[in-house]
Length: 207
Image 1: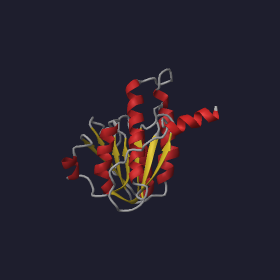
Image 2: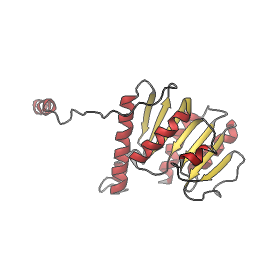
Image 3: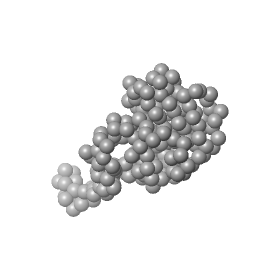
Image 4: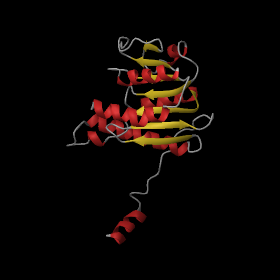
């Protein structure tokens, strides 16, 4: 699983940001520090600053002048406003993997993302967690499905404002590119025609 996560970071996240210099980077979720240490490698090569938030004390993960660790909930907005920079170029959300919570974090921090910046959301792929698959886990399957749907609904309302890409390696990851300085529009529920009468007829004709 660590190899999947590292591969996902290297090929999807860090490949996208490799040319970004002098950036402020915001990371929600530290744990063992896999992404933190990779971010710090990028910081030291490209004169960037990393700010990491976690509810647990992860301050011993690294010792680097380009890193500031803050022990806090990611939605303690008032407190974090007082100690974080005003704007960021890269944000990674990898904390509490619940669709409504992720939506709340995106809504608050998207406006702090510079135009042309990237917002990454971990855990959007449910396939490893389905019944009888190698990570078989009901809650993770449901949470990741719901987060994936939430992001697609967000794209539906913001096609002029963002680009949205995915990787489905391991638990997956989403990448949002901020195309302009407009605020995010409220999500629009995508109306599927999968179960429509027209599609039923289509399937009958094709069978």
